[in-house]
Every structure is written in C-alpha cells, then in structure tokens.
Image 1 (cartoon, rainbow, N blue to C red):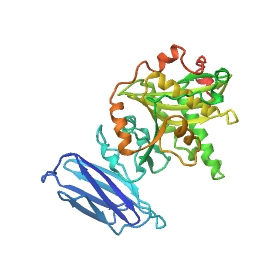
Image 2 (spheres, rainbow, N blue to C red):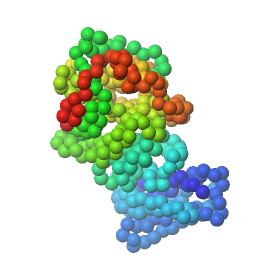
Image 3 (cartoon, rainbow, N blue to C red):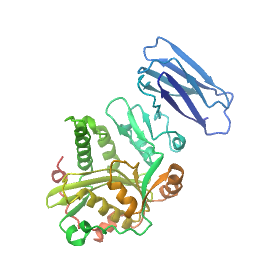
Image 4 (cartoon, rainbow, N blue to C red):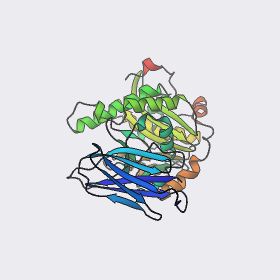
Length: 369
C-alpha cells in the first residue's frame, strides 16, 4: 500500500492527514503514526483505522521541534518539524520528500494553502527537483531548516497559442533591439548565481540589511543541483536554459527556466542594469517570442506577486491569466506529457529568428558574478 501524507502543524497541535492510492486499506498493514519529542522525554502514538482521515496530537509545546514518523508495513518516513510559536495561528503544511516517486505528488494538488515546507536536503536532490518540476512545483530553500515548496492556489501563466505581439512597446522596436545581443546558456551556473545575488540584494535592501546571501532562495546548493541537471541536457522530458541580454560587453539581464514537454517553466530572472530602458522586461519579451517560435504552448511563471505591477501588464496585453489549480492542471498535464517541442530553441536561434541577434558565447569569463 502507498500512503501519501502530510502533517498540519499549528500552535500546539499536529494533525496527520493521509490519502490512499488504493480504494481501501489493507487490514494487515495498519498505518502507525507517532510523534516523538526531540529530546525523547515522551512518546505519543496512534494508529490509523480504515476510513480515518487523520489523527491529531494535542498538547505539543509552541515553538518546539519534534520528530515525526509514519510507519506503513516496512516503509518508514520521517522528518523534524517545529510547531508555530504562540503568536502565529497560520498552519504549515509539510511535504516529506524522502518517500516521493513519480506520481506520488499528485495529492499535493489538493493540499490547502499556497505553499508547503519540507525538511531534508531537497535542494540538493536532482531527482526530487525533477519530480517537483513535473508537478509544477519548485524548491525555495532558506539555507537553514526548511525548504519552501510554492503550491499556489492561483497560478500565473501565458497561453502561447494565442496571437501575441511581443513588439507592441516602442522599446521593442527593431531599431532599439539592434543595440543588444543575446546568449543562451552562457554559462548557466554563472547566470543562476548572478540572479540569486540580484534577488538577495533586492530582498535585503527592503529590510535595511547587507546580508544578501541569506536573503535569497538561490542557495549555492540549489545552484549546484540545477547546474548538474542543466549539464545533462534533455532528460526525462526536461531541459534547462539560461538567457542573457548584453549591452555591448556588459551583461544587462538574465532569465532562467526549463522546458517540460511543451510547457516552458520560468523560475527566476534579474536585471543587472536597472534604468529607463527596462532591459529586464526587454529580455522577458525576447524570451517569450523565442519560446513561442520554438513550439512551446504554455509559459508558467508561478504565483502572481501583487506588488509587482509589471505582471499586470502581461494580463492586459500579452495573453497572461491567473488559473485556479484545477484549470491550470487541465492545461498542464497533457502538455508536459508530450515530448519537447519542435523546432526547438536551438533551431530557432540557428535560423536567426530571435528578436535580438546572437552574441558569440564568451564563456565563464564573460559572465561575471
């Protein structure tokens, strides 16, 4: 029997919920759920019965770390979790990654809330990252105890089958675009690390901090993991890319994502040059045109961030929409089941059909961190 489970953790309470692959559980394999205090001073145990939806353990101390285990036959899974402090009433939903296999994450689509958290070295596990990507998830590690797994109830995406004029803005006229050059995968590691630095600087500055490294989810471990995945090329229906926009020999902006079947999944970007030219926005539109020409049908951006006004522009002028989970996966599932599209990004670039002409790849030295 396969058991999909997640604990609902709130102040002083842990509730375990399960869903089952089979219609009924086997009497010979009861699900045993146990909560053990981290210092092992006490143990509480409960057994799930057929038809039960969960078990609640009360009397847990707020702001305290506990070890949680689930036993089912000879399968055991566990993690450490810290209950919320007394000031918080918002629950945290936890995803145990150590037991996941392809298809095991389907239950996440029914999990409440916009995110889950996972313990363990999720960001260092290439296979698990691939599983997350196939289910429109991602890992945002904080470098400490938890890794955030965004699971938005409302998802922002662009239907690339619609007719979109990527050059409607005056900044996207051919004469303006001719001033810049484009590289792809130059180099992936450097571009991703740079995007992380830009994100960290922006987030830290909001709080008057100069600790940029701890303010970004693009940790060195995640950079290593995604770089290894990128180096594999196409694998399991996934291929990673970085796009770099250059003003002369100066790197102006980067955008990173991956193709999953006929979906392009955008996971980060950043502008090195921030001025009236809005070169980060220029690169976004160049990438949109390029992946459309390459044959991708759907462009997923994750959740819409209300304070980022530029996303609203794509809702009005570039075919973007906010999808409920059910509507989103009705589009996502059939597209990610297909092979990567034709003609593909490499052929479009080779045929000179990008809005911005290609720059010879300068290698590591040309992509400064």
